[in-house]
Image (cartoon, rainbow, N blue to C red; front, side, top):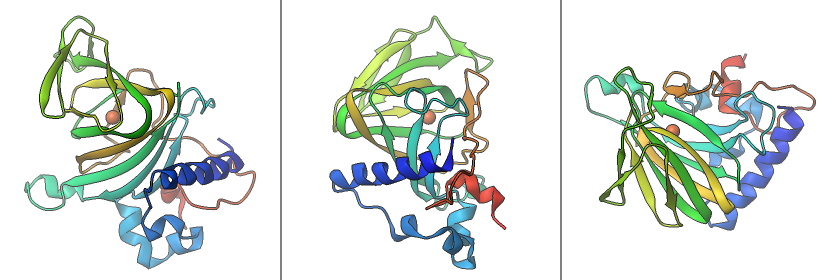
Length: 225
Ligand SMILES: [Fe+2]
């Protein structure tokens, strides 16, 4: 994606969050230089902050996702089973904008419709080798009640509703009718290693620097001086 496009999307996404009364933490507005300072080291190490992706396919309106990681623990604590083993994200799925089919290895996630349109999730369970099981039913908790759908069934969440996706549940999602504000509460998360996509696509975009960044993305952190 071009940096100018990212700067624009970032500004409109922030306005969308605020239109629901959702206000981001102060580090959301730190300059690239502030993000390079030692004060930002925990934020950078844990991959907190802005995350705009087109999955490397160059058609953000059709295939993409806007995320902000508000908090994230340390995956090293998973071994002991104690500590900050959780994460929180706030996201935007635009109307008819697909987040492509994927599953997670470690992360369980609650995907929450926090407002806007209807959030549609297409769901599959995993075969024994981890690939998509295109035959078997898929069962997921939806706000404390189990729901069972046929393979590839579409779960529709209206504002206020949520689903729990355990590791291994294949999922793709998009907004229907309008853009959707999505909350995510999950296991501590490393997005560099914990996404398995159906198609061979990268998790993060590649940036073409046609103007200076207003804010850094999580995917920029590995290129910090
Ligand atoms: Fe996911």
